[in-house]
Length: 321
Image (cartoon, rainbow, N blue to C red):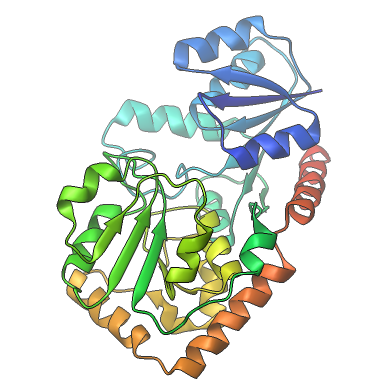
């Protein structure tokens, strides 16, 4: 039997993969509830863990002498986020606790090759890659792209204080690019409207975002760090010209299609110049890029394909113990 441990509300992809394994959900809310669940819940052979704090449940079992396997899904920034949220924290005790969590992991499953390399810097246990799936794949495949606009799209939740998706700098960037339009969709983004100029439309949460893919030529995502942004895969499937940086999982896919779509500059002025060069690409080149992304999305990342891949990766993890 498998226990699936998560904090508050788990990621829907993690929930689906846990369901595919027939795992029993164990929800925690804080360190105290995690320790309590570790004491009172039944002991399972294996634990599928999402979030660092959730590690306290199986670690408590292990401290009680139970022989278990702990497999961590690294879909947060634990191994690579260079902010104070994780291993780069200025809180020495917090950092030691996180390293202790990592020491107890028997295997790790991440969302991208980038995240795999980052995880391998902190542990010698096996690290496997299993990407997330694209939920509305069929609908995105049907989108016919207009590649003649000057409109950029970004989709993602605003999470202060760390703002790991870099939404505030994105707004600052487009405030200085009045000739281009930017559409921002995502939970908690409405509070940023007072920071945006008229060329930026902030819609907060939108139930059906399909129409917005047809309004934009470009999808832009320049995070501080994100292990495997599903929005990049969705934008590729929709045929947008995807622009990202080396801090985003799946950047290797973008780089293989067209290296100039990866922004390596740090200053807003240099990023602006880079984007202007991308926008100046001939229409035929944009069409070729769009078609290549669409084919990648069409041939990969279906729910069925990725669920089967996850089951195989899980089996590999089990065979290690």
